[in-house]
Image (cartoon, rainbow, N blue to C red; front, top):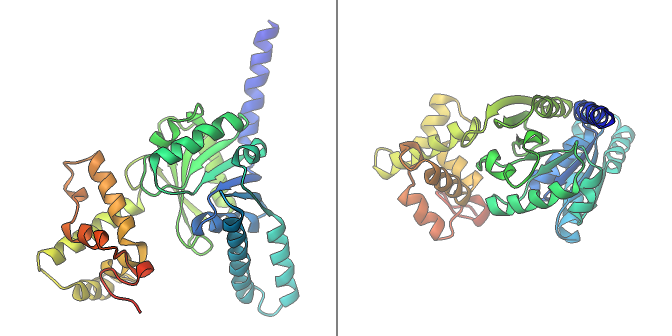
Length: 309
């Protein structure tokens, strides 16, 4: 009877912990996306630890967050510079950094991973963190293209694993895609939705399908633009102008591809093609493959579909 009572208490305690508001957040990956998530979480009163492999990366991340906050303050506190400075200091106090992920996750409610888009690396990371994090801790990946279920398979907390797909730049973009796998519990899903809203974001729900909502529509659109150009049915310039003036898009598909990165677009479409080789939407592009092979990734390399000075 004592054993049964203990199990009931443990279950109730665990459930209550998961239903509690997320206050302590660990973000793995100090790049632009990870730092952006850290900034937004810290700005909304969460205690944040940003984790990466090297102190130099973390110093750059912290500097980037402070610089971004200064830009926010210029608009938000234009007439109150002292209040703006106080806001920056308050937010920065909510952010700390670490190179020890296993130690950091021992006292966190939520882990958000924002590292390289490599399934094995993500699985290795979460597999190790799963052994160090408390039972109540929820894991989430910020992946834009990999299946959440595959990433979660390296852990023993499938019910406490989901996707939180933010958009760049995180402080500016209101959307968050909350990805629920077949194993994600209602409690974990509710917590992820509540956390997204607490950040001031607008969460939308999606099942664990390739590309979720935005990229599932956006990437095939960009790929079809390339195929249209490959077939000689329109110049890249005219296709871009047509979509901006005819559809009201702020950028044409080729401008957007160069902004996102041709290497990123190729990585996504290659991964989807491997998962669903018979899906024509996921067919690779010889032109895209050639540009990537030549190291022409877009704006970040100075040349993609267009040249940049």
